Image (cartoon, rainbow, N blue to C red; front, top):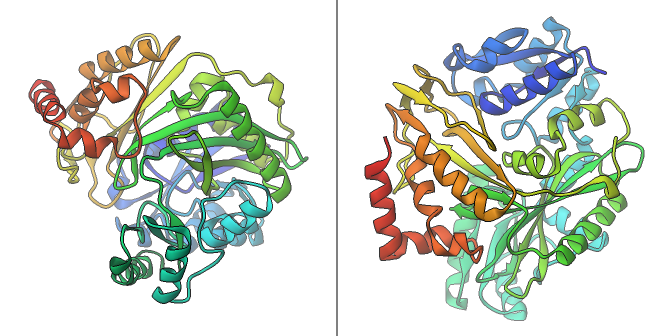
Length: 461
């Protein structure tokens, strides 16, 4: 087992890693920018190192500074958390050259899954179902038009090196494709320094379902069921739950089976999440794979009882999975709401100082957060304030528990999206489990949804 782990991240995920390390008897090193000098992950780690000024590229993305911090503190492993360098193959390779364990999959696997075209090719070879689309990178808008004609409109253009919805354009008619191709490619160059594009058939009312994978270096691969992540805006997730109300036990078994088989074929190790689009007929298609711990991992932990961060550390240390597929059972229902520092109506970022803070509690309530009264949410990073997770015996009870917990949550001094979550929990589509990735759009467009949101804003302390 590792003696000391440096956490190359910040916020609630850095705290989550620290807690997992402490329970395994591993010393921890927190790194921070000058903007995070008073952050909780700095306070609770055994050691801390300042690695630069607030901008990410000068601190949390500064590889020489991170490696120097690991060297001077004699850390023998680095946990990247999520975001920042968590899916950076070059960083994983540099760690290996410096004889520091990168807590995640091998660099070649990160590189394979980081390129969406290569990932599609690998997924197809491994037997995963794919949406009809281009077999590789598109050479031109004209080639995109030819594929669109073949597979039928609507189509979606995607950046090969993309993620988070950037470099994506939905095209519903031929005359709009050339302009969309140019715009999406330019966005991809700006976001990823790579303008390569591919095309797929667009599913009008998709559900976003993901399968959690855990795999050791001894050939054992297990899935931990699915998470529903369809409540999102601009491809950014807001609410997640497990199990999905749209996935039957039979479908879960099939999705898990093909996912495990594919990961065995590829030789995947450590934690990973395979993301699928599911259409109205319950057919699922490979979308992408994330080679890191997910923001929404707590809902899987709550329904399976598996500590994913502890498991990730054990797997990175070369240990065998302590359980098999037959040992995995899903009990009850869990829902996670991402509490962001943003306007609840427009979703505009709202950083600033928290003047009052009181988190909800009680049976079945979990709050993963690095916020506290007097803490300032910096404008330089992600706007996540907390993840509010509830667990109950049934989905109906979990929704009621979430409504209760959201009503208890007090965050003052900044705006948060708590009112949005309170309104969303009252929407018939969500309560009935009959929703897709356009849930937020429909909620904002409906008179009832608008009224619920307005009332929630007025009632939220």
